[in-house]
Length: 490
Image (cartoon, rainbow, N blue to C red; front, side, top):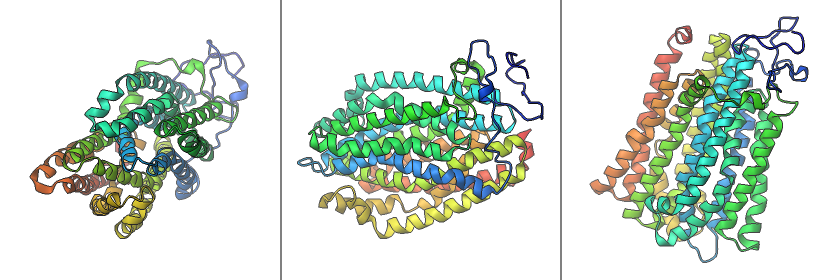
């Protein structure tokens, strides 16, 4: 293809003289070809070992997830030891978690929607379309980020009281959320655009996206919280600064020379068709995160009624432990996603089945080990966040109930990403809603009313893990694995 020629249309592939697809970067309004952007594909997931391909992405993703969790969990560890606050600072920050998860949900809407579509387009050799999907996802992230920032800063007081805050805990929750919200747009970019780095095979770079911010957050936390006496405000500000640094790292890579497909201005113009595809597929990750937030809001309201601020602090610890436990499962599903999507797009259906088998087997083995550890040593995990005796006493039985069916939950954690990776939006959205919205939330309201008190809140979660895990796995097995995948593809 001669320099200066305009691609015929965005759905046609472009090839070099050797018959290999080239990667088109749109650096000008006329969509001229930038020869410096034409590269060989370094991440062909249709070749080599499936376990190696998944783990090559999963391991750095897991480490990146660990770093991501440290953003918020380190805040809670420090605030659990804030002088004179007892469990109130921890409970206050716990009240902000549903709001934080909701902001992350919008990032997942774009990232888990655009990422698989990006990978499938690359697998089909439609590199120009993949690039436009990435640009459209970025535009959506910016729009959502600005709207959420304004909403949180202006409405945080009524929202927090609605979600279960008391006068004592709002003093901590309101200050933390105000400063945290300053980094909302940057957090959206970090979460929503990192899948496009991973989908190009740069797992280590994706890991460094989050590692950079986490290290900065860990360094700034004690300085701002204790040395400068900012308390919860310092924790929120440290996280906002860290998110800014991570976002700049992502943008530097995706607009730089190392990226196979670059993020460019001319690809950011929204189109109705692409926006619909991104948001429809992304509804799975979005729905799962939003329903998790909804369930947590209902938990906080119910726990405030039946147990007070102490049990909100217990739930904050349980959710913090859950974030750590989920790390490898998120890494595995994140590593399997691009491999599933690429091979599905390339028509390598036997390799898709191998990827499904491997991801489910390793996820189930890991969650079984973690289930045993939580059942045997819950006190050790709680003391990592707070040494307060009352919190430990209330937290041990609550944690054992909450995680009692965690092994079954692993079946959904491994099966649902299969629907997302293959672009099966309806199924992925249904199972995102099933566990929390259809099972956990109603039971959280009902079981405490039927005489179970605070224990009913934790029983509701265990019940939802059992039912949704089994139903999701059986559906995936019958609809995808056992069925001929070429039927789905057609």
